[in-house]
Structure formats: structure tokens, C-alpha cells
Length: 116
Image: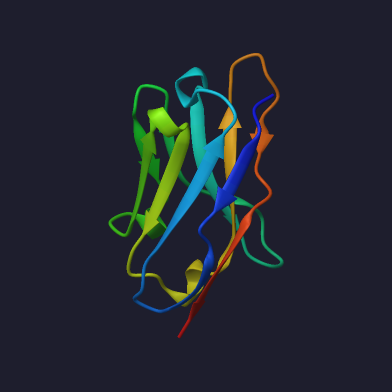
């Protein structure tokens, strides 16, 4: 099972930017899908963005045009660039790794707080 460590969260004003990082313990190209999820208090954990091992990306409608998922294979790291942040983006952000015939892996989460 792959280990994931997120970083980059923090407090930012509305309209600001943050970049989250998710460092994996093995090659991200061996992982079928890497995804960023978020969970606000009292809500379910929802998919924000994902990237497959061949580079196909997908985004939730609420973040399209503002967030960008990318990766650096040399660093085994997936990023989430978040621009024009809104208070409703406030949540704990989690990284997830999905690999065929293996249990899913989750990171510990990183808090993002956007003030109005």
C-alpha cells in the first residue's frame, strides 16, 4: 500500500491562492488514479480533481477553471493549484491513491481555510 503525505494547506483570504502537494512513497505512474478530495465539517468527502497514470484529468464543476491538478514524476508528487479561492472551498483536503488489486490509500489531510 502506498503512503501519502499532504502539505501546503493554510489560511488565505478570498481570491487568494494555495498549492497543495501530495508526496507518494512509490512511483505515481504505478498508481492508476491519484485524486484530491475535500471534506467540510458535517459533509461527505467529495472528489475535487483527479489525474490518471496516463495524465487524464477530471474536475468537480465547482472548481473548474480555478483549480489545476498536476504531477511531477521525478518527485512522485501530485499537486493541486488552487486559485481564486472562495470561503466555500474551506475544508480538509485529502489525497487518495487508487491502484488495481490494492486497497485505496489516503493521506492524513491538510486544512484549507478561506476567509471572506
